[in-house]
Image (tube, rainbow, N blue to C red; front, side, top):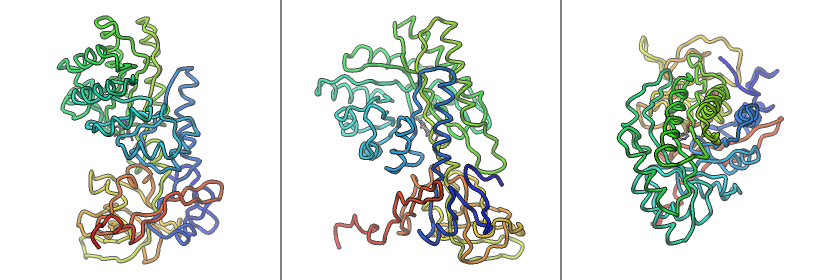
Length: 433
Ligand SMILES: Cc1ncc(COP(=O)(O)O)c(C=O)c1O
């Protein structure tokens, strides 16, 4: 199994990340514990930026904070020059608290409330990605009331639907996000926002899916988006200064996954934008991308302590750990697969097939189904890798299990960035006691 970034086997035969022995981290901070490899996060962020810089193209790398947020991460990525995509008043609040410049934030979402939109306008958010007709009306009246002008992107669904291994050219119309192009809704929206002084329409946006491996879907989307821009230039005299092509770049969860290095996707699509703009004498727009998973997934590892086991002869071996669907809902939610290592016995031979389950009261609370591992015993530290995206950010307190702590590791130092929830935290919202 592949280890990412600074992860390696140390002299004690333990998993080491960022120069820190993960067994010691488990002792110090307890388990379950999310461990983030800071050097790898920085390398991913820099890889995206460098790709654009090498192409000498104006760009924005907008981190999709839904993948994982903490004030420390906002600060870290802001220092790397990234912008941020937020999808709620809560994410916006957190980004601002971390000191992110409002100008570097874009607001996404298919049902932003009037309160959220007013908050965004009032703090001077950089861009609002307008998603639907209802939002146009809400925003219009907020802008009228405040007398402000707001930079916006129009989110369109270009009719490209990318899946992990393939893409299709139809089907995306059946999406709750964005203005449909085929039915004419997108151009109707454009006309509405161009007609209102409150909107400064800087460009268009699409996002075709997540955990995408090939470049075909991105290429098809880029081609369609450029065609839309050329069409809108000739028919509505609209020239975009920004083309936002969303996120979705794939990562490696297990050996079956074969993503490209993320900047490779970007190189392809940015080059396409450059070439087709030149060919049509269209002013080269800034290209924005919104990677989430590909910045943080491989940098994150979850440490669990092994507890009980149950072997059903000729059926299955269950091994339970001290976390589960509360800190990683992805296997239960969409059959996501993961790889794992035994952090305290890294080179032990894999001798049995087990299903790693959590401690939650759901039969579907499985983290990994049928994985070949060394024979696990209670107190072993199991490290599930590539858990940095959509794990903690989707965490729940189901069964009143506190959410885990999160540490950043770099150069042999560990830093607690999110403390473990306490039992008292779990009853803090109760108003009757
Ligand atoms: C609009 C938008 N941008 C970016 C992303 C990030 O996608 P990923 O984490 O796959 O890069 C998402 C994910 O759902 C999204 O909806």
